[in-house]
Image (cartoon, rainbow, N blue to C red; front, side, top):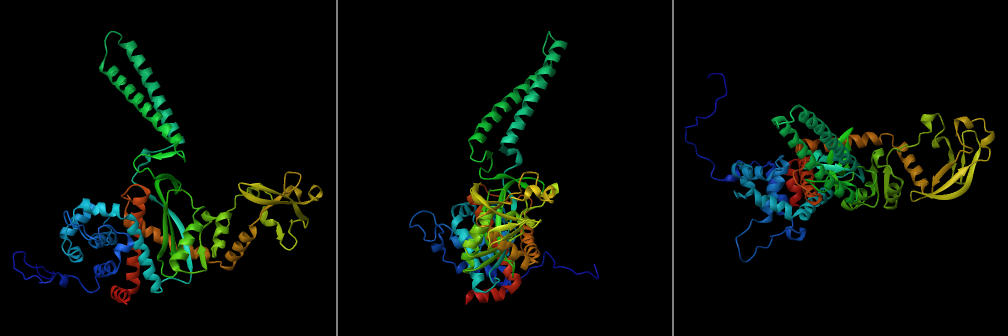
Length: 476
């Protein structure tokens, strides 16, 4: 085979390196993992088994299993059985965990029993990044994304879904009863195989009906009128025009190096109630007093915006317009100009809307304004179909106006948000594959998500700084 690159003869004897360390280059990421984990105070983080028991079978040190997990998630190996296999054949892992070979059950139990400690390790790496000045000057983009849980849609039940399935079962039973009645008329003397099959189907659907009715009782007793059979904490959520049974992961990403500063796993299908909490986590992680948060209109909530500003966080997001006035050819609220010095509105016709009364709607204190000149106004057909055009103002609406001014002063805010965070979720889902999460319940899934984010941040920093520079920074 001339003119081709040839390999070595399989039967030729070779002298392998005497040291396993010679297989691992100086730039190999496993050296970063080894140094990072060795510098952690595992006992203070809450890992079990740091101090070995005086009796019983010796256990693996938590650092060994933590290194195994970080390496696995960094290389898209999340399955404990695959990690067990890799420990026996992967030279990098042999070097990293000194040729130890824990079985898959030991590996799985470590993740299950040390969830809180593993999540703290993810926060420890964020602190390391902060010390290396890898974050922007207090500006992050926030978004949420839906991730699949270990629960198929067939094993998730809502009020509408259980009602539809019961109706389908009832219709099937009714149809099989008609078919059985017709079969009995054709063969009244003896039972045929067809009649026996029809009876089996009727019995099967009758049993299914009983199961569905029992599930319906559980659905009615659930606080959110929804249950999942495989993963009890997973919830059905809207996702890209369809549905998904899973979790909503909230993340805040730094706009400088696109590192995930803070994250939280929820089973709420919307983002409206998550902004202030994730922003506060970012403030604590970055140790700053002022913070700018860019988000999309799915986070728009007056209460959340107020909570953010009370925390010293400046939220920037487009307003979510819910009024149907414009679609009906009427002026919307933006056509009315508020004068704070006079506490009054000016309508498109130049008339003054003064304060009339205060009310409470959906827990908000509102002030109602209207003008006495509406009846004779020439623009009334374009303004309202009622007697007066009433404009209601929230008592803290000045904060919403301030946020709108901040958005107009930063016209590229939504572009920054999109370029900062959306590819982050795309990368994570690509790493995780089609199944996404492998564990069940919110606590264990949160641990799994933290491992994915730790691996993402670790790889991101290595790409930015290089493995050697990162190890030098960690050593100082």
